[in-house]
Image (cartoon, rainbow, N blue to C red; front, side, top):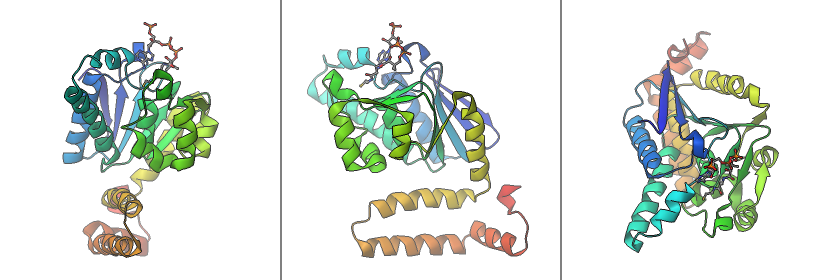
Length: 260
Ligand code: COA
């Protein structure tokens, strides 16, 4: 793995997109590495309780590598669909990671880079960061990222921003809940540390269950389905060893085992 750098610091894993010369644009290799990493982490959290995703150098991620996109135009339709499916699988694997993912955004998050922002659970952006779903400016569409982006920013903002392809500042991204904190660039890491501390105080299984809960309730077909999902989720956690430990620790006025 060299297009992706990973580093462990106890329960926190730092994942860095590493093509700074092209502002960490996605090519087939980076998509393969990110997908493989996400699959490995989903199969075995291996003690990882929070992931921080960032980009090396000046920018978070400039989206799809334009040179790579241009070259795949020579592909047959079947090969093009296969390629787009690989990108789609990457975003889905990241979206469904069972550990909280924090995005660290400096510089620009454009196209697929803004899509990557959308599959993070928590996003901290530098106040001068720039975002955009600029695909139409290149004659393409923000296709594989759209389910994740629309889930975050809603249909109205997606219609405006997908159709204009306009770039927008961190303040606007914050307003539509694409990002959750906007800070001076030199405060990105300390802000992320505060989020990590919150996460480490929560039960890891409960946090994974909460992440699944949000997705399942958002996708529930009707109120009856939603009620069944929520009742099962609560019953499962209450009866679990982790849930029992959390409730006991609260009543005994001590920290639960996972927070020590
Ligand atoms: N694909 C391929 N190369 C890219 C790229 C992309 N998506 N984005 C940037 N690069 C390359 C540039 O061509 C340039 O290469 P060069 O050094 O050989 O000239 C290098 O990365 C640096 O780009 P530059 O524009 O000089 O950097 P910047 O820091 O001033 O601006 C961005 C960064 C991300 C704002 C700007 O590069 C940009 O807008 N890129 C296009 C993003 C885009 O349209 N993405 C949608 C793809 S679907």
